[in-house]
Image (cartoon, rainbow, N blue to C red):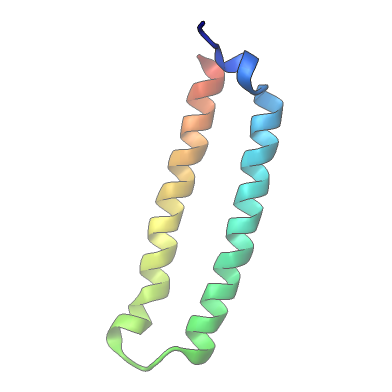
Length: 74
């Protein structure tokens, strides 16, 4: 038995799920950045953590969106 993408989850539902996950991720990122700024120690690693976190997060979010687009256009 073979399943295709459209039989498992419609593109619209998958897009809405992706958007919801990205909104939750952004909300958590804002909370993390606030706590790093407010309660973080004054070390070089902690000062670089938000920049590193945002860079890696942006790369992962871009990969997720690109994967979704590739999956839809297949």
